[in-house]
Image 1: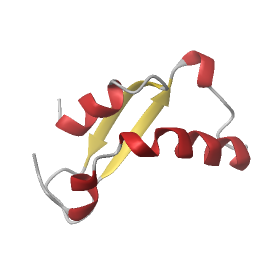
Image 2: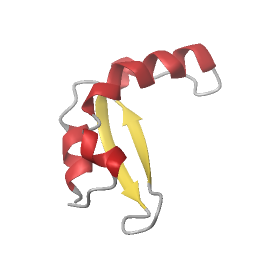
Image 3: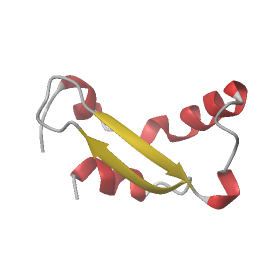
Image 4: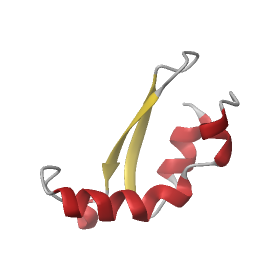
Amino acid sequence: MFELEKILGDDPHVSGAVVFGQGRFNCGVLVCPKAEWAFDPADEEKLAEYRARIWSAFPYTFFVGVRN
């Protein structure tokens, strides 16, 4: 498990997370909300609200390219 997956998994709004593309110029992360925070991803307003809720869980190092 990557450090970011653990950090996101500790967030109270997140059921699980998977990081992909580790070691490449860009990587991505799939985030599964906990059941009580589930929403239709086609609902862009709810998606934006959820992203705002979990944003603080992303460590600064994830964005500056520091690898774990």
